[in-house]
Image (tube, rainbow, N blue to C red):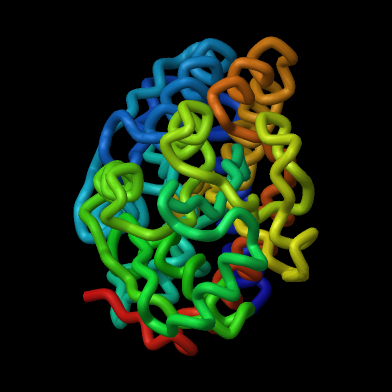
Length: 322
């Protein structure tokens, strides 16, 4: 028995020391950063901009690879099954949480198969309407929706997307009903809103702001704790009487679950240092991103709360994606 005890103690110590050594020498080669959505969108832009600065800090290249399909699940699954050595990472938008709420079956378990390395940033979400809609504030919008149940059309980036869930979340809060029109992406939906084919959307502010400033659509409120710096005259949904109506498109960095804690700590530290650089922070804010600082534990707790919220919304609305 004593011999067995010594064996297992030695084995555990050897594994621990190996993990420490891995963390101390990390990284020794380029890191693959998987983005599960198409190139050119907000997630991709943020991943590449931050990744470049982190690569400079770590002294190794970070290679962004877009692995798209199945609502982002293909890229997420790829990283879940990758070797847990810190050289294959995932940079995902909040669809990683909303997908758990709407997909009947997923090829991974978000909480079991991943470690959250860092929350990186977010963009506010705005309630925007086409210029012909007879509503200039949230009260008028809700009154109109209640007077015509199911008549107002709203667009989203697809069935089960964050825009879809946010619109249904507000329907549940405001006791309204409207008609969902799914698109194959945010930009297509926005084009139809500008063109008058849609009545309204809950859009990432980053996407909507250029059209708001050009006067091509009208913004009624932002779904945030406080007013946005670029729209100081626009109230929040909370100010408009809907407590708890706080929604954001957030972005986070993940590693496979068995990645050594020292590697996770190195990555978290590098991302945090980059995001705290004043000039770079200002650059990201000018692009429409707000920076988030959170420990890996805080980030995981936040993600758990998002899973709970969107699962409830999806179940209430009967939203399912295949």
